[in-house]
Image (tube, rainbow, N blue to C red; front, side, top):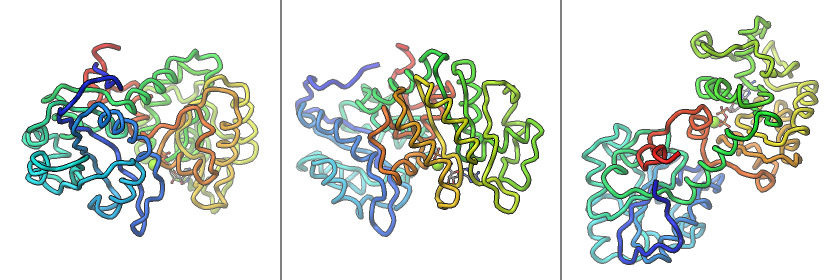
Length: 361
Ligand code: ADP
Ligand code: MG
């Protein structure tokens, strides 16, 4: 795999960069900007190397980058020219200045189908491709996968940092490693539990995933939220493995477990304070409602206070730590949700495969 480095001479070369500006937007305002901030390094690097840059990215919250363009420019410190179509890019390549940004690629025909035609169109007139959007690397989309195979590919600094941190998380010795899994999408979380179980001292489980595991252990979960296909989901996982620590008590409303209880917080904290490596993904309860936020916030503070290496991620998990304003108190905060989980589950990510990541590891 080729890695983009600051000293590279890219004078006059056209570089297509897959970036990540997929941020939550409410009433035209960006709610959390950490993904944007993490794209500044690659831009600075390429611009000072003399490259001509075209960015390609997607956003789910709104249709167009138009409403957040000024914020993007201010956060990145570069003027951006929004390019609604590939014809606009052609014109931009002839007489444009600064950095180009292709309009929301998720709305383009062929993007989610990994279309060869779209990939060819994206690659047209470009000299190199940089993958710097770790959070989409688990998706075989045209701007992530197919296009990377048509140009000389490079890993950008964020992809390098993310894969290094998550590899460190997986490879750290089992003794002293504590993995905390919460949240809702069991189909994405159970494979992580299966993969890390033999590589960790303890896997602490809260949230809806804990309901699933408790039910599988024959514990009455009342009317709590559970995934419907848990039998299938849990196949291959020994749910009785002693390293899986389920929350022993809950905050319950109308028979539904909506947060972990004080005994669970105390038990989880015991593991957290002894750990040398902590990996955390997923809130431990319905933290958006303050009545059910205490479990998640207590665990967030305990992880932040721990002297261990702390590697955390997940869109809602990061939203929870941002509510406490403690983002800078973790060793590494991943920009990935699904991509982080796929990586921690030991799966090969198409976007990493396309840039040759697995050829040298
Ligand atoms: P992340 O984005 O960090 O990966 P998920 O998307 O998997 O996390 O799940 C987060 C969601 O799970 C949150 O909206 C939270 O309210 C919800 N959640 C967690 N625990 C429970 C619970 N016990 N009951 C209902 N919802 C829960
Ligand atoms: Mg989420």
